Length: 632
Image 1 (cartoon, rainbow, N blue to C red):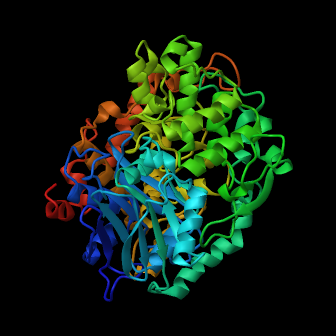
Image 2: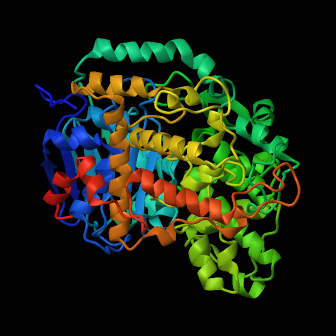
């Protein structure tokens, strides 16, 4: 990686710090090394938390930092760069909180003239931030507190006199510090995982409104355009699934082969999967498709349901359910009523809740009720049964407002299990305290490994999805540029899969730093070229992948500082135990194989047997200087 001869492209060299306790704002102007090595997103978030947040900070206390961090590609208009990252110490896990989200907010924030926003402290009263073309205002939000997300967005746009203002905001769930509250963007896109909405609520920060007209410098626009044109020429074929149906199509595909999580990962098949799938959605409630900044694909769902005699009418302003929501609130709870699942998703977006943790927490309660660990006396009469769509929707309301038994559900299934006792902990499907996403580890074994080692707890985005390497073309081809690899079987967990996982998970970490949508099938050379063209610094493929490994390593260092170790890199016993029937009968890695995979991943990452990055790997990654500067 050669040093640039001119100011770095893709950034302004300005990180905005806002302290809500005293109302002060400062602008940090870090050197170019920070941007060259970390580029933004998760890498920058982990670095700033290590540097500026004391160890052991209460995630819901004023000393936690809430960081909004686009990457150098945000604002470049390269297709797929309509994402940005949020981070803090997670109130759900106590580990790193790092959540990525699409839409338009990150693009508009970069146009306002900053590379990142770090929110410190806590306001005495509700406020929102107004950031526009280098200017920052802290405005009163007492009149907005308690409002759902769409009315809040409408009110702020009216106050500012501009309907093109983009907002990151919380609903009642964030205000009530539900530990898996989301930060909503454009009201229908969630930075959903890790409880970033609760951190925002703990600071009495209702929203961050942004608007800008600044022009971001791109070092070589013509060079970047070559990569954009490749995508334009190929996305309709390579991303046909997204163009045709989007993520809900996965319900249909995974449902047939028994890889759709069902009844809290207890059942081998959801016979009614077609009732909540993409085809049925297109035939019934789908009314439009939406997209993110700099994206031609339009994979986002917009649904509407309007029946005067039905209480579950759905407002299209909140978009529509994607795969994770359909599975978490549908098959996972044995609910086969698409309208109720879509209504629950709408309410999650209105209140600001992560649909994955919400669905998994509700299914955990259903499991406890079925097994006699919860009764009417313990829950105040709330006893949801498997398949009860009305109870599932009601639970969303209870959680968001912390009403009745919802107050305890709002703590997440791991904390609730610890309170219930009696074997409930084994029924909570969590890693590091975060609920599993909707991908079956008994089928996708590499992704199951990823659940275990992900710094944020169980997460599917920053890991390699085994199913994407099973057919010619696409992602297996980019892997072949770095290693020998034939088409993969999802259930394999061997040396080839581990080496593939090493490269692909580091590429995904890079994507969460730069920031790039994971649905795009760019190859490694494309991203090295895009990064070079944007910044003016020449990156090889190895140097590009090293950015992702730095992000993963800094995240690991943060977690290690907060008390996490190899002992936390594990999966629930339930999803490591093979089904006795169904399409996946007998399929699950043995305990020995899984333990070997963890150990081998540590070796590939240069971590010791306790999962701590070695001094030699820190030196190789060029992190020693940055860490010395912050005393780590």
